Length: 92
Image (cartoon, rainbow, N blue to C red; front, side):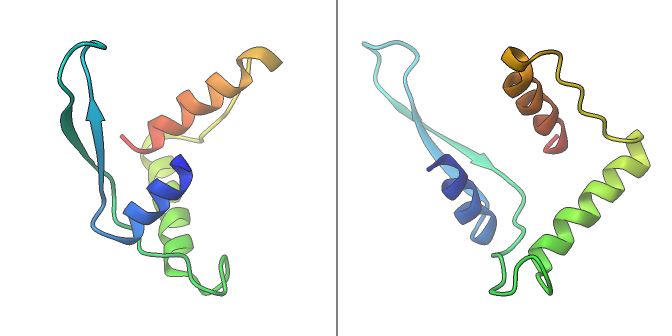
């Protein structure tokens, strides 16, 4: 479900809205996160797909600026956390 929310936001206005509580007892408030608008995946994805092309080009630009992207999981237990941590760097 979270992946679909991101996909929908990338294809739309780029806004993801969350209702947040500071504590269980506190009143919820709205937080809107803006993510890059990349468009929708094409029916021919990943070929002839403007969104796929943007993703690849963004990664190439990132590597040109920051150096090669290397993912080094430290262990099977920490692998998921390491991947999440590294992927978050791409969206900064």
